[in-house]
Length: 277
Length: 298
Image (tube, chains in turn purple, cyan):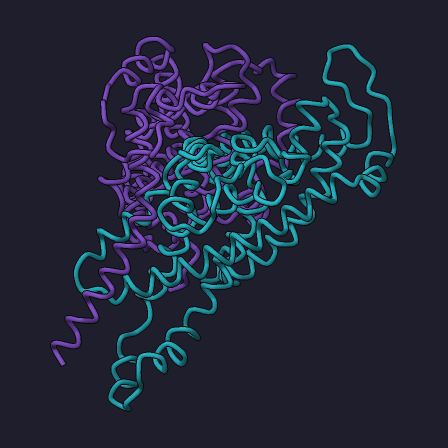
């Protein structure tokens, strides 16, 4: 019996390793290509371990292509957007979860509707709006839109989290004379920490990778984000793949750090609502 | 006085967030209708003449739209089924594992968190047409499945290969995570009592695991379907809809009509038709999410 179990576990592990290889191999080949000089990128047969590894692509990406600037743009946009989403999202969630008021169901319905709406279906009128508000080719145009697109999910998540939490502490605080704002700042926000962490990460990942809106409303390179910059490295005729992948790897680093350190919260966010119970 | 303040409070807290939704989602939704009924020109101070329903009737005879709709459906079908089956298989295997659950979960999830732009370029590179393209090399020289290199991205019959493979590869981890969460919420008592009754592995899956997973399968499939319908970046990065619109999708067609042809009116009409299609799907999604979605019922 025990032996049978060991065999079963070994087979499972082996199969999973084989599958995982397929998940990882493209990334390994990307790393390998980033370490190759241009002559070696298409050498035959292709090599997973570069014969003459070089860091030249990373150096070029970091120094010659304003990549630091794009990195900074992406950071600024992501951080401000996430902070705005946390603040506005928790305020909305607090109202929805704790107060009865006219229009409450309508607002919640809107949140759910926009959460499930395909993000690209409004890009034309959104562009017209940005044009009217003189936000085309500005970082604020990116931030405003990123907030609006990612806010519904966070409201949904925070509202659901709050709805499951008993109100005794808040009620006791109110009897002691605390105002609603005090309750929000001193009780609700601390309680919501895990859900705030989840919304922060999910929003950050979304904003950090956002490409379509960023490429649509930015013209001048000074407003590019990392995805736009990486896409632009793809030449019309020839592409310097080593450089593309060196830049890609640099762009992936913040995501990897978040993913490895905060996996728990990411998974919580991804499964929110999808699994009952 | 305090009473009024208390009454106003929830509105005050809703307002700032609501303004974002109003300006960037609600108003655009309404103005899209107006735009779709005109020959809209984005240039300032140009007339935007009323066009009635002509943009909508143009869709009916637009063979490119129908081709892109067909492509979108085929892509959605292939990738959703692929992601579901592989995601479920991986989830079942990981769930039965004693050691290394977290390790494998992280590995399979990695593609989900990496940027679409990056992985699209990566797959474009892997499917390079030269003999030293990674996929060509693997299929030609390692596995001997094909006898000469294929120009994957420029041949009509294979252009979707890279986009489909990418769609499945990137989404397996997402399906896996959700199935895994669902599997872990199945009560162990059920399995134990069935095992005492002498049920084998297949019977356990057939009579306990699978029925318990059905609501999750419904949810995941609709979520993936809606995701598939919005696939734009891989098309823009890998094939640009080519060759000869063979990989054109509805979203890329909408996008190009607006931002390449500057035909905002027609593009908006297309968006409305498209949104209607996806709205039908998201109604399904809401239902699959579980009727628990009312604010007060739990």
